[in-house]
Image 1 (cartoon, one colour):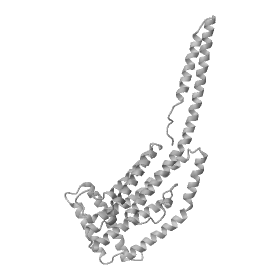
Image 2 (cartoon, helix red, strand yellow):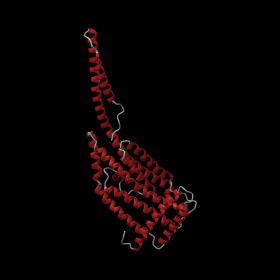
Image 3 (cartoon, one colour):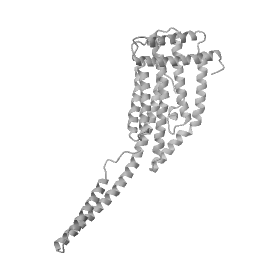
Image 4 (tube, one colour):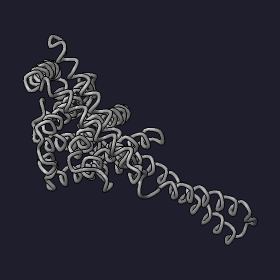
Length: 350
């Protein structure tokens, strides 16, 4: 979990050992009892002793520098982990900005370390409710017969989508820097998870890369991809948690250890409240769906939208990427439609 040292004092140690061996052998080869021979042997022995001192000093310097470098770079590694988690929370917040809604919980309480099953559940619930809300909105507006240009609403806000893309780019940059500190297994896993999240963000920013997708279908496409954006933050958080746990094993700096313990305490302190708030929010979202649900016209509306999506998939000039995105939207619309129709038949069940 630390970068290599910028200078290598071990070279001094190697040079000292080599010089000591060479000069010692030379002094042994000098034969004779004259004053000149004695002076030469004494000079070679003195030089050999100097090289031996150089070897010892270089070795000690190497050990000190490695220890000091490792101690100082510990802060860098944990700073990168912290920045990555903050950028991850920013991406999730950007997803809520797209739907002009507030997160049900404080994202700073969700996206912190150590990662837990409660935080994992919070991310999954957020992704599910946001996706369902957007698909339900698309069905409602489709049933009201709004012109296609009115369906996109805030998805047309270029600035909001641009901010989401910028946040994803910032996360990718920090994750790339952090991966240099990780081993050959965890590093690629983190980059893969962050890359999949970045791809999901592109699906929100550019949900219809082909020309055969009607404007009225953009919102269902955004709904499908936006759920993947929020859900995609969870694998990245798990990788960051593993990197955090591994880095924690190598902490030797007491100030750093104390700071990390304080942050862990702050993160864990509100976990019970987070769980209770999450339960209340899920129940409230269910009740809102009950109140906002269309009844008799809902079946026709869902069938109409589903039919239009299938027409896009079957279009002869549809490119592969467009078909993939529209198929995902179709699956999501069918799932939400089936769920809401089931609730219409039996309002007592969620």
